[in-house]
Length: 332
Image 1 (tube, helix red, strand yellow):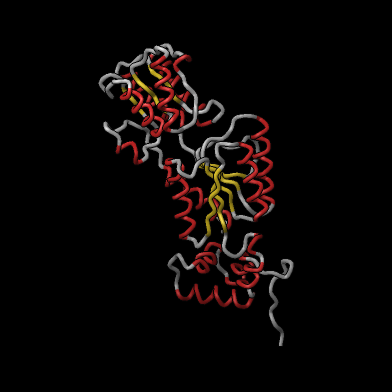
Image 2 (spheres, rainbow, N blue to C red):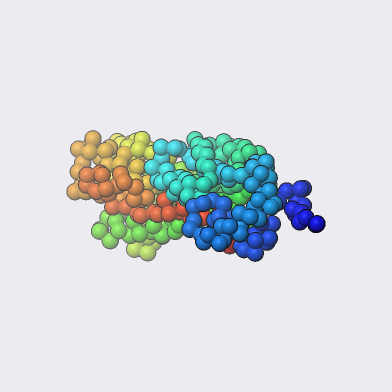
């Protein structure tokens, strides 16, 4: 009596082998194995019979670092307590949990060299994907090295996902989940200009970050649209934190800067700016208006509540994880 042999992929069956033998899609096999999706009893029986015949589960665990077993997604974030991208990480982790995946979180500390080192380390660990959160650093060497890591991840069966930053240039195997950063800043600057403000202190973020560059571009574009001269001397670059918002406003007031509004790069920066104005005896918004960016919970907790740009950070995280899962399951 003849016996059917398992496909030979270095002696190991793959999820595609299971799908082909069962006569179903790779996505259907994944749903059955994850146990997180409703499937028919007939489909489950058919897939699990093939899994047993091919000894798929045993082999998958044996090569967990090569992308089988329990997939792991690495989430790299600038600061683990940073409110905005913590919501992206929450979306990634939540979507990963639904699929039975594991999540790792690493912090870059606003250091491009550490970020590159962590991407390389995760590649060596054989993670299913590396999800990078936040703005990219806009200089050639960084972009070239990141593109090289993206190709290296792809060759190792992993994938690079960029969230909240522009795509890498050229034909690079990476997925981008972004939002219209520039238009958000344009809307906020237009809000201030339409209210009659002409002297606006702008706190866009670090000058080398693509996020800050886009927000500054959006603000300048609004000034141009309203026919109001834009004063580069009213721009204060710095990190997206409370301390920068406070210090930028405090220093500007001490130096005699004349402004009636503050356009902050994030809600956290706006909170610091608001406190500095109050410490100087100025009222918000009666004396100086403030707008933010992100629409994190803090924005509605401030008094008065902050006018801000809503960014769907948590949904962006879920979309990022789904993009990786779809690639692994043979989808678009």
